[in-house]
Image 1 (cartoon, rainbow, N blue to C red):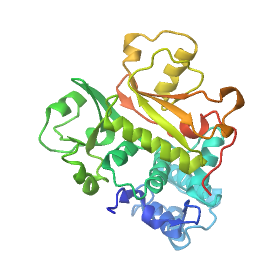
Image 2 (image 1 turned 30 degrees about the vertical axis):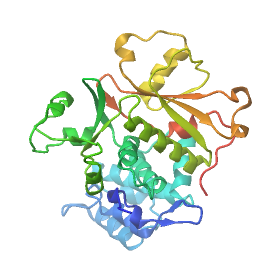
Image 3 (image 1 turned 120 degrees about the vertical axis):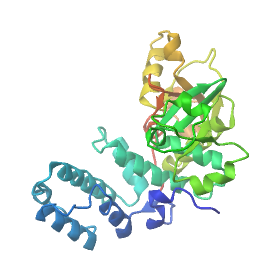
Amino acid sequence: MTDFWISCGHHLLDRESGGGLVATDEFFKAYFIRPELMPPPEACEAEQQLHAALLDQPRRPVHADEIAAIADPDARENWQFAIAFRDLLLRHPTLEAAYLALMRGGAVTLPPLFINQLTHVILRNVLDGCDDPFVLRAGELFFRPQRVTLNQQSLLAADEEWIESENPAPATPLLALLNPPEEVQIDILNEDNADRYWSRSDMFDMGLDITAGGRGMAALAEVMTRWIAHLLAINVAIEPLTELRDARLTWYVGLDAAATAIGDRLWDGKELDDRTAGRVAGIFRLIVLDQAVVSRDLENEPVYLIMATTPEKVLRMKPQNLITGLPIKRLEAAS
C-alpha cells in the first residue's frame, strides 16, 4: 500500500488496540521544532530555555509564568496555543478521544490551524489502507479550505492555499476561472492521472470534480461514512443527491458555516434567492443503519447534509458537525 499524507505526522504516533491514535514524545517534538516555535537567535532567554526543556522532556508541565516570561508577544501567543494543544492530547487516551472532547465541550478556543491538523491526522488513521485516490482527495476537504468554481457544467474544487501561493507554472484555462494571484497550474483528478496522487498527496495540488452525481461526491460520502463509523462507532449510509425535491427537512446538518445558515433559512420556511441557492455545493441523504441509536421522534427519518460555499466561493468544511449534529442517543468514541 502506498503511503499518503506523510506531513500529518501519523508515522510518529502509536495506535492502541481499539484503533485510536496515541500521542508520542516524537509527535510532540515535531510540533516544537515547527518554525512558529523555533526561537530565533535574538529570542529571549526564557523562550530559549522553555524550548530546550520541552525538546528534552516533551511532556513536562509548563506553568503559566514560564510562558508569560517570554518577551516577544507573538512567540508568547504561539506557545500558549501549542501547550494548550499538547495538554489537550495528554488529557485523553487517544487523539480521537481528545477531538471528541474538544468538539463536545462547547466553545473551541484553539485556532483553526490546530483543529485542521488534528482532523488531518485522525482522518489519515480513518482512511488507513484506502487505495482509492478519489476518496483520499475528497478527504482533503475535511481539513483544507477549497476554492470552488463552475466550469461549464462541472463544479471544481481546488486547494485555496495552493491556489493563493506563489507557484510559478504555466497557466491553464481552469486557473483563470479560479483567479489565482499568478500563473499556476493544477490537474483535476481523473482516471488517467489518479496514480499520480500518491506522490503528490502532500502537495495538495490536484483538483477534484465535485459535480452532483459524479465520482467526487460519491467519494466524499464514503469519507463521511468512515469518519462517523470511526469516531462514533455508528454505521450510516450516505447518498449524494443531485437535487432535493419534496423532501421533509426533519433534520439537517450543515457541513460548513455557510451551509448551516442556508439550512436555517430552509428550516424557517424561507425561500432562497438565486445567488444563495447557487452557493449550495452538495446535498446528501444520511440514514442511520442502527435505528436503536436514533432519537425516538426521528426514527426512520433521513438526515440531510448540506454543503455550501461562502459568497467568495470558498468551501470550509466543518467535519465536527457530523459528530455533534446527528440526532442520536449515544455518542461513543473509538476506544
